[in-house]
Image 1 (spheres, one colour):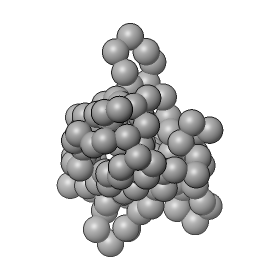
Image 2 (cartoon, one colour):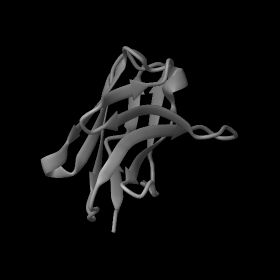
Image 3 (spheres, one colour):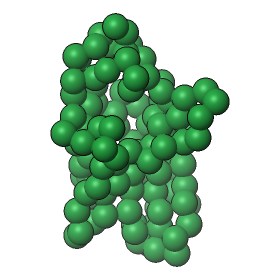
Image 4 (tube, helix red, strand yellow):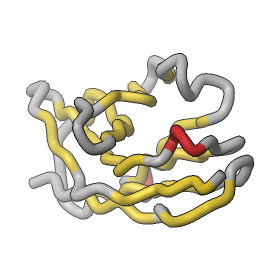
Length: 116
């Protein structure tokens, strides 16, 4: 069973950097893809970065060129390196895993706050 745990959130000044980590402490027979989404109060959850093993990455326009998603298969971990952070990046960030049956799993979320 998949269990996702995010870490690395916090408070940072505009222009700063943070790296989020998401560990899958459970097991899955196959990973279709993993990704990061974020959500602010009153808004829908927004997918911002996706990595598909063997195929590549994709980013929302709002983070393209600033955020980088990567995966360490041996550590069952996906990362989100966030640079040049802006106050509008403030949100709860969620890790997502889609398995080979296209079932989606979510972590509990980690808060990122960017001060101006």
